[in-house]
Length: 139
Image 1 (tube, rainbow, N blue to C red):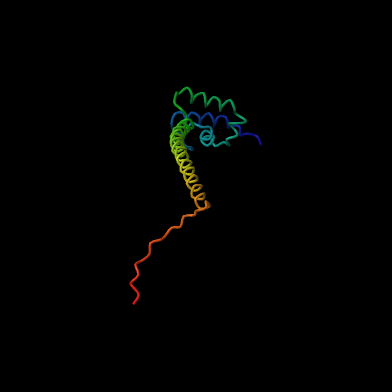
Image 2: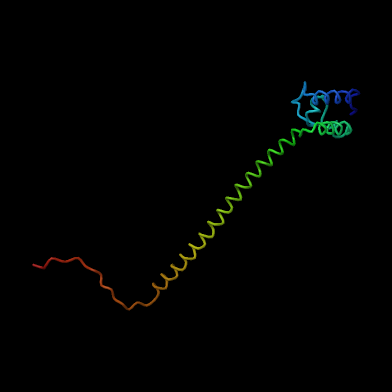
C-alpha cells in the first residue's frame, strides 16, 4: 500500500495546528496518536514511513519546554503509586507486628495446653469430696 502523495504535507499541517493549540480533528494532545488523527493518517505512517516527521514533532514538543500529555499522565501515576506503596508499607509493618503477637499467644496457649494434658494423664490418688446439698432428715 503506497502512502498518499500529500501525506507528508498533511502531517506537517497537523503538526502546526497541534503545536499552535488549534487542533481540528484531534484532542490536541502532544502525542503521535493525536498527530496521526489530526493529519488523518494511520499511526504507523508516523512510526514506520515518516520517522523523520515523528522525530521532528517530538523535537518541537521538547523545545516548548512543556512536558507532554503522556509525561504528565505518567507523573501523576508515579505519585499515586508512591502513595499506595507508603500505605502498603505501613500495612505490612502492622501485619508483621500482629504476626509476632499471635506467635507469642500461640506459644503461651501451647504451653498451657501441654500442662493441662499432663495433669489429666498424671495419676491422681487424691479423692475429692464434692459438696452436697443438705438433705432433710428422714421421717
